[in-house]
Image 1 (cartoon, helix red, strand yellow):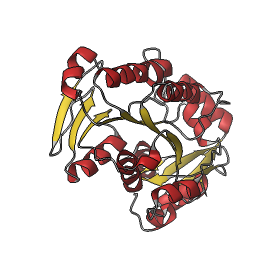
Image 2: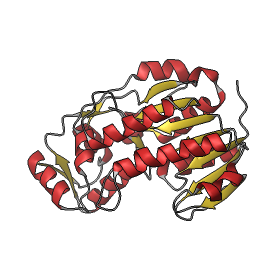
Image 3: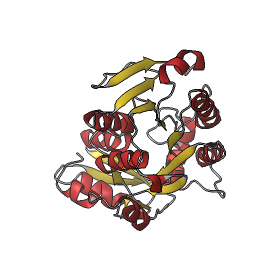
Length: 289
């Protein structure tokens, strides 16, 4: 079992990063957390604000750290920023930085559904990022998560926003399934990947035990409210995502949602040996709303 004492986290201001930083801080692990925007730091944490992750600025500060957890990624493109720029090129830069800083372990968050047969822009960029990491020569763990949920993730915020309007819109039938995993389980698993050799050079689905349709998820989430659930034509949903840059769902958001991607939870349970939270129970008890 490796004893990692100093960990670098990129994308420190994101949902997963905030929970992970808190968890690791409570384990008295020294953190070097990097973000493009300012954030509140925890104990044992050094904060770095870097707009472009410039190696000349970062190298001295992160040198000889034990591991780097790469949490930067985008799920929606624009004319100013695209998947290749962030998911591929920035990952390449981070790997070069790891090598120069003599960091030997990297943990990467990819996506459930990424494979050699990927055909959407988001998955293709994640696949290329994975290949760069695999070929880097570093000790790696790549996680492919389904929806990671908690009280403050993007998915949950969207549903809360819809509930305030007393109507949740479901693209298409809503009968496609998702396999969400609770954030508390995720941070525990990432910590394991830093400390246990059985995670070395592995790609692992990061998924919960419950396969649940999106419609069922929404009904449980909005239980006890006066919210109406309305299905909208899938073609209309795609039209809005294409023509409105402020739409709740991007094109690839919809591709992922309706893709019915399923991960191997039994494999994850066997590797981690943790007791997973039931998403259905969390929804029933209102702990996600």
